[in-house]
Length: 244
Image (cartoon, rainbow, N blue to C red; front, side, top):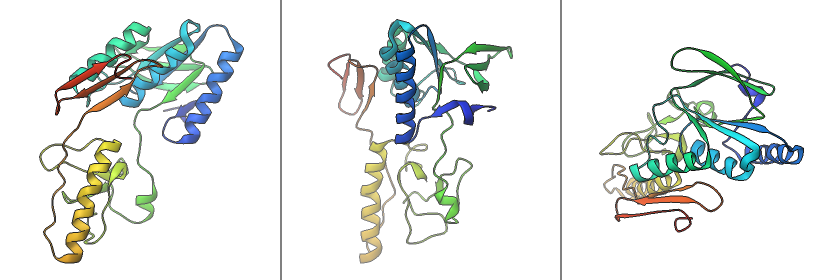
């Protein structure tokens, strides 16, 4: 997207968070009306939009821009609804089926589903959409997807390799019984157990296992004193201060 690399703040590394913190402090110190735009309606986007609005309060308008029909598409229904309700209660403007054409110095140009372009003021733009994996996999000569993730077997073996495994955000991992597993810490920890078992099987001549994910639940931080927690496995849901 034109201007995104120069004017939008990514949100994947510690230094990105530090850069965003400094920008927030600048805006708060300056005072007066301000506008913040979060691009991407996944977990990071919704949590960030809520926390930005919570931090800025009435002095800043916060918008979330998402190409899809609804935010938190991979989330469980309870957390998806909680996230939408929390954004609405805080006054976050959720723009669905909307893309970003360009990001400039203090402006952002949006494109709605009708194809109409509109330029809006934007004091800070945070980009959480379309996150790619590290380029280290390609540098090592491993087979990767268009998103840069390493192709792996159901046992998490790297494609074309017999004794190399990959897990976490880098792996294009599909659960043995479902679609691709999410890029979350919970999934990575479960993958670690499967990889440890399979490495031991390689060494001892044991039987390797396919990765199978059992979701224990998920949590969202939706502001300084608000959150949402859902665990279909244990039949437990909570929101607000209790979940926080």
